[in-house]
Image 1: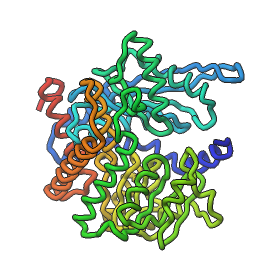
Image 2: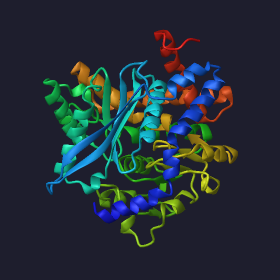
Image 3: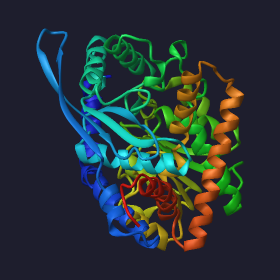
Image 4: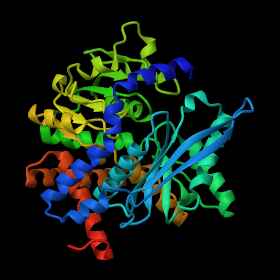
Length: 432
């Protein structure tokens, strides 16, 4: 993609950088609130507010022009009381240590909510992969693995794709790890190509999980998915597959956005046309003369708003302007704490990220299981087990929100903390 696209995204993100940098603080504030409701001692908060391990490192890469460029990389392992840590690696120019630590904490809660034998982790590299050649991207991917090789592995910490990384990046990382360890280890990483031990259904897992969560909340709210008006903010891997599933279910996707802008039509967009004509980064707004901004799209009228891109897009500047009934968080941390309070006052129901977008890590767990067993499942088996996990997790969180009379985000934290805290207590790490 061109450097112009990178500049557009950088300008768009600059106004949201405050919300992104606040992600760790917001994680800690919500964590503390939920722990208070559960009457756990302060030592539980003190232990869970910070990753157990955090590695910061430099990755030198010889670029195609012969120069050596040094990239900054990170890996956070939040908590491994329940098992090896698990979490994606993102390549993005706005990656920060605070964001990576927050994402690792959210992943711990996500794994606990969905009853997976994992703790949470997250990694990142400060870069713009759209400005790198395939050769440079491969060198960067291999360099990342060399930097973290001592603290990752099938029984230590299992990476996966995240923002701007994909199955090819996972393949390079797997190959580098195999060379370092001198044995074949497909269970080291998930989100791989099928040929190298990937699981069917992994690429679409996050989107399907969000769709299943939307099905459940639509039943509770008595809003049929057929003819439901939906806006999807973000048209990358998650947003585009989600648009496809919604279209097939009879919903009207009235708006979508990308890094350049957004398109909106109250009668419904031609989703098959958008899917056929998007570029490799999910850009479609450049196909239309009447494109609007991402901000304008968020404030358009709809039944369901699904932020599926970056953190902090729903904040105290725009939350009061939202005209939806339900927000389903497909992205990580798209709604700030201040914004959530405003949405609660407006009685807009928010299905939180650590519940709604957990389909990705669920099917990553399925892939890990298949790799460890050397036995691979059919797509129908993966989908059936994913839906079962999402349904059980959703109902558990919803019942907790009713029991404690709290919003679903607090309820999700309560359910996530409960199992982690118990595992820490049994191991003797905390006393209560």
